[in-house]
Length: 243
Length: 236
Image 1 (cartoon, one colour):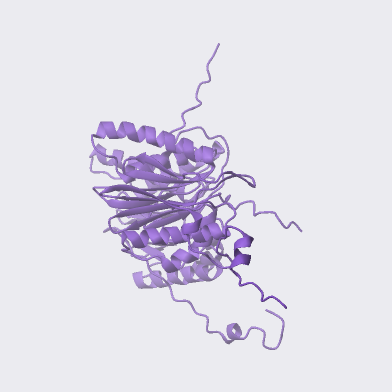
Image 2: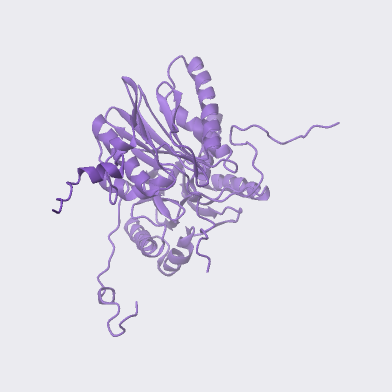
């Protein structure tokens, strides 16, 4: 005679029964981030897509974690909200120690990696790609975790479409010690390309900056786009019927 | 070539049109009244706007069973919470309880909900909780299969700071437009207005709604039409 041990039969609460891989519903698209002279710059648009519909256009996908870290997320937004709750608890406990120490970006990244990888092992992933950046004690840190727990650090990272469209630009044009202005221009160049070529992109974005001194997340704004090529005005000149 | 195959990764659309709109002073919730099982209309006068507390209501879409059970659980928890708190629950708490259940059971549930209400701290608030359990506070929210036809309409017609009557008219017009084009929505338009003064329920049957493109004025019978046409002069 033995009872079923670890299964949670409760219907309420995040630990409630769930046994298989899900699929995402409300999703955010690319996050792009770079190291620059004073710290990290991170950009993401404010779109929450629902399949092919651009359903929500004011979703904040960049969030401050503790005092030293910025978290950007793409993928399922409900899972991102759950991750934020877990991180809130983590930071709370960190503060409660009241020992003068505070979790830096390396530690938060490590926590996230463990969370994502352990969920993946249970075939119940958090369907997100996360970008974690921050500065602590003069050390700049920029890392990424995927939904299967793959994690790494680099001078520039991007999720989703950003990997294909933004990173080639960054590989070419990023260099050590970019100024704030150069960094923002570079990110905007990437975000503009994503706007042209990513179906799930929306033209409303935020750029966040984190330095030793603190964090600023910009107000939402839109980018101008350029359509003035003669080839765009007359695409079928010389080849009527083509597109 | 498969003509009817949906993109397998796109979310299921859900029967119903539901709307929640804030105005200066409170919120207006609206919904159609059709519950369908396949192509049959099981209930043509359903009430999809369900009470959670005196000051918070929820619009239900998707699976009728799932949305009902979630509402029942939330009503139960909110009731206890109100007793313990000693004062009416806030809209935010109600919405978060819905999120907790929706997110925690995301593999099994298929329901999209719009929570709306009024409390003394934040005034009128609307929270959308789509499939998956994302919680999103919005000045207005639309949901259900009929909402597909309303994104453009709201992009154009929504304005900040409407009056109660403007907001209700907008909701009635919108549900009515969705009913005109969505087969899974129909019946009557129900609205619930929640503000500091309390809750008002309204009911708009088909004959009180405006007519849209290619829709005709309803008649009792062809015979009435024939009789109002002046008779042909008799040939002698």
